[in-house]
Length: 233
Image (tube, rainbow, N blue to C red; front, top):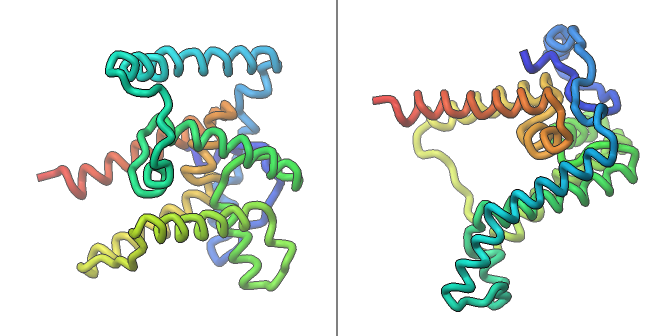
């Protein structure tokens, strides 16, 4: 099972709550830090990065530039940037590039505080809850401030785009399903030592074998649930 694999080189963090004993039992088997990163020298990592950029350029960037050239469109169009950034949906390619740059910046700023890992949400909520319940200011580390930034940023962007609304499901059954789903996601993230952000957007780029397995499990679980909820006749 993915949940019993120690995924990353995280500093130990205590998780609390009345189900702590169950978490500790599920994490009792430690298979070690399984990652390809530790077996690769910096030169190999540089080669992988260059090869990845070359592949992205060949498959997506160059064809898009050629298409614009043939259509007589400017290669780079910076007009109406505010509307394009805040009010229109982003294509998957610039979204992925932006997240990659953000993850690099996050890793550098996080490392400056002693946390050797990029983006992650689960630890931020744990630290926030620990601060609220204990009043210990030391729990407000880099990750809780990342969570605060996500909330504030989402609020500001939604306000600019004119999409700031309070929404709730009309059917109580849907609300109950979302509540149970949220509880299961939180428990799974704590047990696996990372949510979809920490696993897919941080662990996978760092070549963590556990993160590859966790991400595949998350995708499979989503597909299965979508099938039973929306696709099955």
